[in-house]
Length: 234
Image: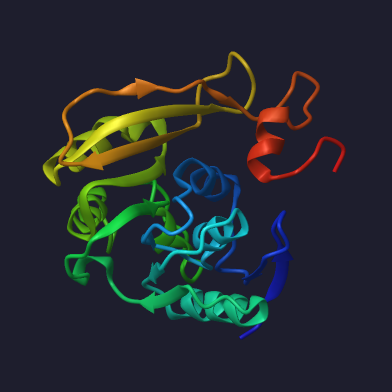
């Protein structure tokens, strides 16, 4: 298995391949969904394990299950864990639709964004970006089974899918509680949203301050640098 290694702000290694790598959306999700230090957590559709690894990089040490359908993704995470000597994250190569009920406190997912249009023929990329073997309903149902009452389900998704996400979440007893829009620049239409749902809770949605990624001159904003765990000028 060929891979290269990148390092997160806290020094945690992440093994990536041409098929399994990570982007800004995964880092935003990891920041938004950060579990308490000893909480039981699950990263659904973990790919190379970036969300679970970023949680660790920011101090999470509780039991963490990283579920990925494609074997290469699980192998990459296993190699990252070996390099870093991390033993509280467990890679699991499995279909999230088959996961049994659990009592986790945090579940996060960076799900497929698209339901139609062009589907990449590159190995793994089409499955990661388009709903085929995994729908929003599948993701929400899995999170609903895994979480204890009051547990948090966090995900990122494209703005046009917001209604789909809320409907799927509520069908799984996951009530939307916190919503945050992500914009490339101030005044532009959001390209992503971050949503936290809680299992079995009453309705009541709080809007967080928007995340703006770039300054007017094109550099990273202080807000984004903080999310990345970097200082200005790095």
